[in-house]
Image 1 (cartoon, rainbow, N blue to C red):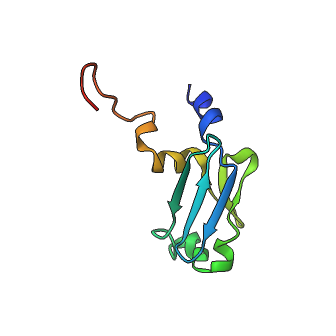
Image 2: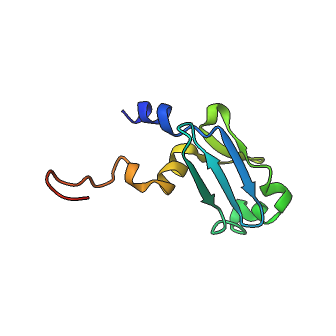
Length: 102
């Protein structure tokens, strides 16, 4: 079931990195848009590279749109980025009970 959802929703066809804000605007296969912030990671471990604006701007869509990648094997799964900006779609999200208002 999650695989079918992934094929319909989460592939990232385009990205637009913003090195000044350490964020990447994402346009998803279903034309939804979201912004993923990486500011909280910059300067930590392998993410020290994010402090270099030229490096950060090299963000690219991975194979078949299933990840967001930087050189040096830094990557984030598309489904994790989707769920981060759409927590209501998470497989473990609590669903309202029948008759309960949303």
